[in-house]
Length: 226
Image (tube, rainbow, N blue to C red; front, side):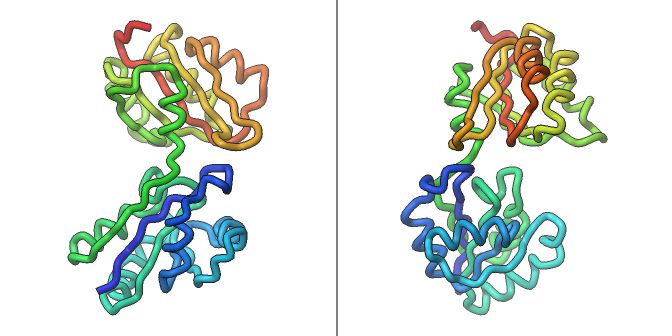
């Protein structure tokens, strides 16, 4: 029986691709890509000519069973996303779960994930933390924030540039204006930036500087001594 590989890809700087990741992508029969146009740039850069197939949040429910059968029949596959590790706020979980249920071996290579450098770089306690990823867009959002108001561990969130200010202002309502935070964007890219301070201070920064890029928000836990 063939194997499924989960292969992390760079979150910005293409040089962060590992030698092993390139070898795996060259050796498999098919690469499942979140966006073949985005992944095509990466594959071309490393001379990878393996066929690609689109696999994303809008079609993964329809394709998963078929892909499992193909792996069972000997077709080795790797899944990649636009950036980072598959399954971390990206497609990959459904196929991994289905493979585990069918006894198919899966292997996740170590590699890039945006929240790790943002957390380590934040200056906030990182011995214990909770990864929240993207909060619910509407339904359940306020309920989730209320539950996190007394979370004592450092909290990590993902957010888009279009919602970053709205989300930070919601954080002040639930966590308080003086709660410490660290906001990282464009990690590993030319214009990488990390802004630290109270929630009020980081809001002020991005009110005067237009938010660009994908954001990782790291927020101090309730009662943390800073």
